[in-house]
Image (cartoon, rainbow, N blue to C red; front, side, top):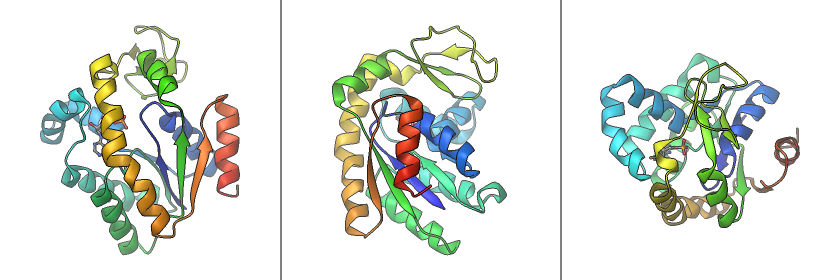
Length: 211
Ligand code: AMP
């Protein structure tokens, strides 16, 4: 089963992708995580992506399509994937459909994580993430210890106010139309109320995909 998670930055896609991945036994594919690792490792891909990411702009589609292809064709993803923040433009949605088709698969469901903008700004402004396993936290200071892996929590550079504003604008302009594209393509698109406890949101997501 291949499931696309869509929604604005701060909607909780990463947290829910980890939980759904554990429940369904299929890997989370997160282009943001792959790109941050590339930036940390100083690879050519990371060097290309860094300036876009720091500003909160989207990285070029070719880079994302290459990551998408590698990740979906990997052994671990043979039974499916949770695509977290992987599809953010129409060319990416089309590219994903092509890559999956070559593998004899398709997007089985799109889960749209719905959160009001004021809440998003609050969440992103108070967010830290583990620099090792990428688990996000709200209400924990930078420098605290990750409950999952013992790594150190840091603030993301793109969670500064200026970049947050830009990411929300970019989402509205480039990513929101992807939802309609999926609806028109006849894909099962489900809106998830993404406000509430992590357990409640996971339960809603599982129900939406009939699990
Ligand atoms: P995320 O961790 O999903 O919020 O992604 C962090 C940043 O990585 C984004 O603001 C973009 O600069 C870049 N990025 C991640 N995924 C994509 C994508 N599918 N398309 C374009 N840029 C992306």
